[in-house]
Image (cartoon, rainbow, N blue to C red):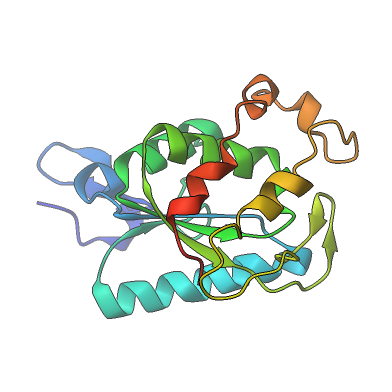
Length: 189
């Protein structure tokens, strides 16, 4: 019932010949994995995220939510899409860097992850250089079995740093409620 004509389909949508409307693929096929990350220095983390998504999909055929390459369509509102993506997924792949811990959009995703009690796979990202909100990688110490690894996120989170722009973010009032301790139940890779 979906059109095979490429000129009627756009990124993230397919034209339904039966109902004569464009249908969002995400309304048909729910995405099991949500990737949350700060883009990083020169998009270094985004490049890792895209490769990771490709590998996950090729190995498992599980659909995923990523803010680029089909995760969002033209005109979509980031906040609403992100909330829906987190609410609908089963697993959040949290690509944690120091920059992540002070990025308004990343903090919103983390807040929704905690609020929706999602299972997290923390990925500690290698540092590739400075970003506006801090190093593009995880600079905290970590050794296998370290149950307090997440405390680094709590220590570097800086709501008052005006360079990060967190106080001006529309969700700034919620950032005071960040529960970094939610991460203690998960082991990073």
